[in-house]
Image (cartoon, rainbow, N blue to C red; front, side, top):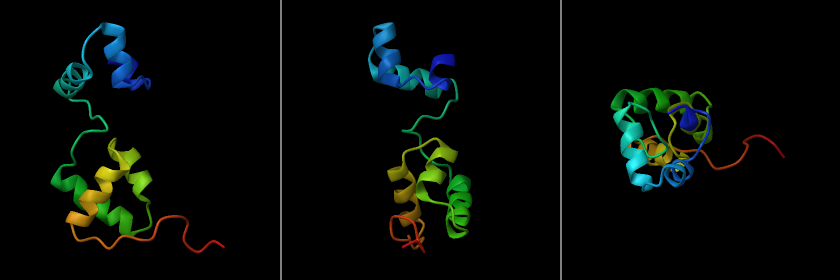
Length: 92
């Protein structure tokens, strides 16, 4: 658990302990830790949508919720949030 929190990937942990990556995933989830493959709870989606509308980026929201940016993007689309174009807005 400490190694994962310190930044070790699931694959590195699996290699270290001689187990499959999915075993590490199940163990981490069993401990209540969120991984980048975690899902967002409905309340998390609502908060993320509000933060996105206030100017947060998809990447910032992904880091906040410990999920992949593609996960946040999918949830935003499912929630009907109008997504901004990629990249910095207002800069030339």
